[in-house]
Image (cartoon, rainbow, N blue to C red; front, side, top):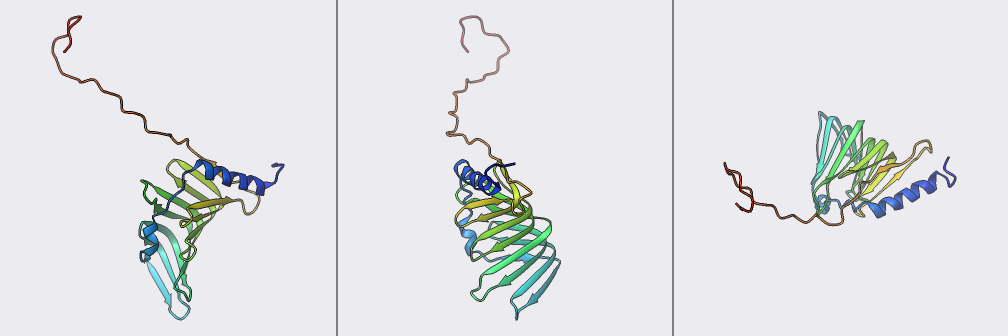
Length: 192
């Protein structure tokens, strides 16, 4: 039992992650790209501005990829979109801006909001960046502020993280000795 309460532990973990994990800089150009969705079936309700995509759904927006069984997209009066993806495990991936690598996430339900640039992962939520791995019941990732937060919404589960040590500087390349082929062994004192 946590003597300080689960809320304190999650807040402490959050600040610890902020100190240890480099920011997951989302590809900023993604925000200006069109959203493309492919599915086995599509239902569009223009009057209500609701689109329902079902069956092996794949959403892409720039470097963002989201795979789900079903995605419901609602467009507000300002033109922003809110998508709710569901499936056995919804998959999300986005390239990091100015870095090699990707941020990946999973959840039974994933909500994506183009106005706030947030992605929420619910139930079996997991995010990976390089070798770092964070899990919890609910993870919120904001690609604009480059912050993610892990919560235990029911109080039953706990937030978990595996954070790999980061090297401070690349190791200096050592001078290599030249390798030459020979059929004879050198005599003592001889150099080839």
